[in-house]
Length: 69
Image (cartoon, rainbow, N blue to C red):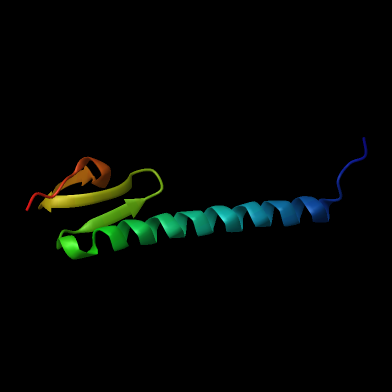
């Protein structure tokens, strides 16, 4: 096998970084958009995922929290 040129490797790495950044940005946008009408504070992080705060100082995963009318 022949070694890949450094330029090809750099382009691949930049492409992967851009793809991951776009995916994370889309997840963050979806989290905030889904909970915008709830009136609760919302936060998102790559490790903590989407969280809402039903009471001050208490953060719960958004996928585990259900609003009742």
